[in-house]
Length: 193
Length: 312
Image (cartoon, rainbow over all chains, first blue to last red):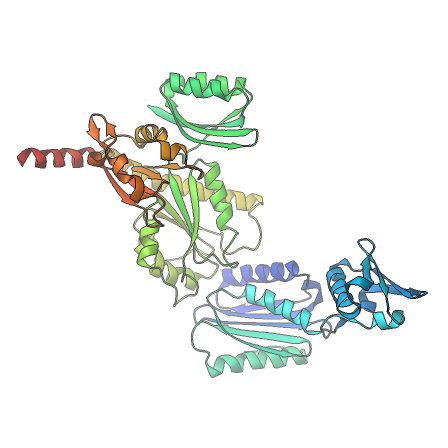
C-alpha cells in the first residue's frame, strides 16, 4: 500500500471514498507500491481537484538487462526473461534491432538471437522509456479525477507528479495552489494551503 | 388473482411446464435459454401455484419470487465512460434483472461535470419510455445536489436516485433515494454492498407499487400480457432474433420490430372485438425506428372515445 495518502477537502464522505478509490486505481495499474507519498485536494463546490504524487524513486528507463538475463554461446545470444510483464516489449525491441528472422521465441520466457555481437549489447537495449511509468501514473490520476473536471494542467519534475483540474476556467490562484503543493511534495515538508 | 414467479432450471422436460402453464390459464412473460439452462418468468393463477411449483421441483428446477417481473427499468449514469461504468451501474442492472425486471443501461451524452452537466429532450423522452429509472450519481454531496436538480427534475417517470453521501433538499426531484453507494472501481460483492443492492430493488418495488396503484384506479383496457399473447404468434415477432422481442411494461409493451413496416398490421389486429389501434396508442420508440411502443389506453379513455364517436 502507499506509504502515506493525505486527503484535504470540504466533503467528509467524498474524502474518505476518494482515498479508497485513488489507492484502488493506483493498485490496478501496479504503481501503488512505487508511490511514497500522495496529497489530494478535493473541493467539489469550486470545483477544484489537485492530486500530487511523490514516487519512491525517480522513474528510470528499463533495459533488457534489468528484466532478463542474457548469455552468449557461439554466434547466438540467449535471453531468459525474469519479469514477464516486459516480454512483449523485449520481443518488440529485439525484432526492431535484429529483424524477425533472427529472433526466435523458444518458449514463454526464452528467446534466441542470431547476429548480436555479445550479451552486453543485448543487455543495453531499452524496453521501456523513463516516461512510461510517469504516463501510467498520470493515466491512473486522470481516472481518479471526476470525468467532467476536464480542464487540467500537469506538473512533473523528477519524482513528483501533480495534476490540477477544474471544470471551467483555470484561475491563476488554482495554479498557484498546485505549485505550492508540488514544491512542498518535492521538499518533503508540511503542506499548508 | 395472478402471481408472477420464475422457474430457474434445466431445459429437461420443460415442455411439460409450458403445457401446464397453458392448462391453468397462465402466461409466459419471458423465456431465456442459455445452453441447457432455462429461466421462465410466468404469470399464473394463485390457486394453481402449488401445482406449478410441484412440477418445477419434479423436473429439477427452482421457483423464485420475482417482484419486478413485467417491468422494464432504465439504469442511467452520467456517461458511459470508464469513470461511471461498469461499477456500480452494471451491478445494479444485474441485480434488478434477477428480480425479474428487464433492465437497460444507458449513459447521457453530456452528463459529466457539475455545472456543465446536461440532459437533452431526446434523452428525457427516451428514459420516459420505461416504467421506472435508477439514476446513479457520485461521491460528492455538492455535485449530487446540483446534478439532481439539473438532470433528475426533467424525468417524468418514477426515479430512484442512487448516490454516495446523503443529499439534502432534493426530495422533490426523485421518488426515492438510496445513499451509501457512490462511485466505485470494483464489484459490489461484499455483504454491505449486497445489502445496498437489495435496498435499491426494494425502493424500485415501492415506487412501482405506487404506479400500479395509480393504474388500478383506471386500469388499462386489456392487460399487457393479453396483447403479448396475441403478438407472440405474429410472424415478424416470432422471427425476430433480438433477445426478448416483446417486453412488458405496466401499461403496455415494447415490440422490437420496425414501426414503419409493421404498425398498420398490428393496429388492425383484433382484441375483444376491437381493433388494437382503437384501444392502444402505437408509437415509434425514441431510441431508434427498430422498435415500437404500444401503450394501452385506460378503460375510461376508451369509453370517452366511444362516446365521442357515438355523438358524431
